[in-house]
Length: 180
Image (cartoon, rainbow, N blue to C red; front, side, top):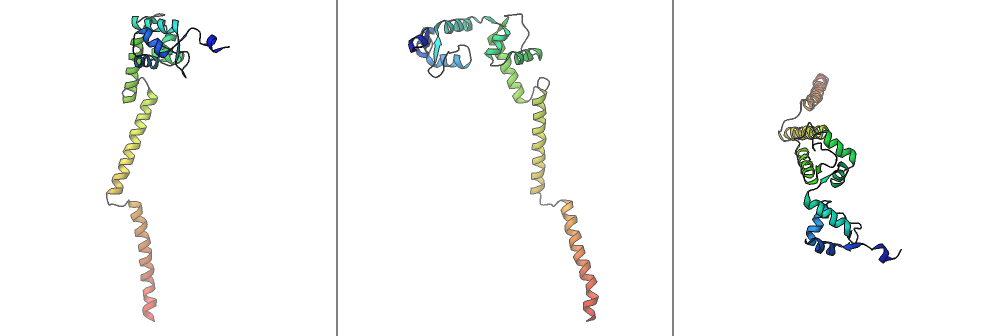
């Protein structure tokens, strides 16, 4: 395949930005948000029909299917349906999802999970947070004990037992030494 045949119907990022009347940086943001998808990324190239259709769809706030929403959020369909089942994203009829609303719901869910306030929605994250809290409290307790200047009872018992044994041996050997 020649290079011209391979690049037929493809436009550069600069040309796509001019065509959509946006800055190149704005088009890059749209690409990162997966609103427009390039065909190649090493030189960024778009298919003319795809970039126009995706951008118009974005501007209109058109309804999308669950599969399109999953792709938009970079999830597989199963994980997207799991979000629906947990109530993160409201269930809609086929092609009834607005991508902007779905994205905002997902971002809010991620923020709640990261802040540790989403116990019912994500029990694994909640368990992790409790484990980290317990480890932090344990480390604080050990630091307090180390800096308090007091020795643990077990160490004191061992030291007293050794010194009492040495004192006992010394006292028992004293009469034999005095007899000489």
